[in-house]
Amino acid sequence: MERLIEQGLFASRWLMAPFYVGLVGALVVLLFAFCEELLHFILMIPNITANDAVLGVLSLIDLSLAGNLLLIVIFSGYENFVSKFDDADHVDRPEWQGTVDFSTLKLKLVASIVAISGIHLLKVFMNVEKTSEQQMQWMIIIHLVFVVSGVLLALMDRIAVSAKAIKVKK
Image (cartoon, rainbow, N blue to C red; front, side):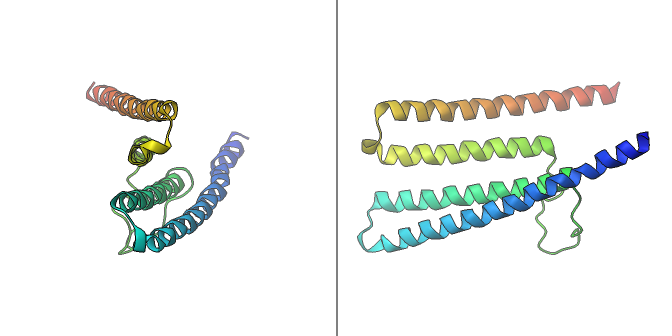
């Protein structure tokens, strides 16, 4: 009975696979948003100002970072929780693939959120006349919460790694 339960629990990891396939769908949606933003940016070129150019590029970078984040979550989540990829000898395999554990994934996720939040904040600063002072304050507070959360998460992971190293030495 115990073995049957354990096999069932182990097989239940495959319930996560549709989540990762769904995230691939979200990546396709993000690609459409990127293409739309790029087309909008290209159509602005005849009358573009330096400020508009920077804002357009920041929007494209923002979408690119979100896409990168999705790929990291898809690849590492699938490999950590469902199954290993059978592509170890593929020439295009990313170097980080197979090396991102759950702890590293959390840090990459928080770092990406901080970067995306920073880009949004920079876009607001470049259009400061369109944003109320209260909205600006809240955006800064939220960004600082992301930054502090990231630092605390990294510190907790560092403490956990140090604790494991001390246990191994004993």
